[in-house]
Image (spheres, rainbow, N blue to C red):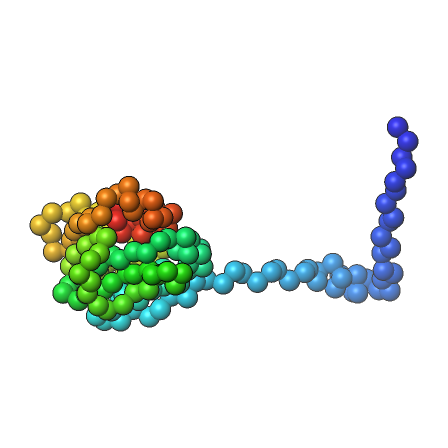
Length: 173
C-alpha cells in the first residue's frame, strides 16, 4: 500500500535558554469554564411561597420549557396549605403558575404546608419526584399530598402531560 498522504511535522519553536524551556513546559492551557449551575432562588420562610418559587424554577428550566410547548390546554389546581395555585396552559402560551382557583381542572392536588416546605428545599427534579411520591403514599402524617384526577389518564396522555417530567410527577405519583 502506497502512502500518498503525509502530514507535515509541526515546527517546534527554538528555545534560547533552559529557564524559558521550563516556562514553556510549565505553562499549561487554562481549563474550560465550568458549566453554569441553574439559578436557585432564595428560599423564603413561608413554605407555600418557597414551594411556588420552586415550581416556577422547574417550569423555567430550558428542557422543561421546550417540552411544555407540545402540551395542549390544561389546568392543574393545587391547594398548598390553604393557598390556591393554578398551573394552566392555554393555546401556545407556556405553562403559567398563578395564585387563583379554578372550577374546572384536570387534576386536583392538596398538599400540607410541611410537605410544601420539604419539597421547596429540593433542587433537582428526580429528587423532587422521589420525595413527592413518598409524600403521596403516606397516610395520616403531618406532611401529605393527595391527588384526585378529574380527567381520564388516557385523555391526559393524549394532551401530552406525560411528555413533561414535572407534570408526570405531579399527576402520576
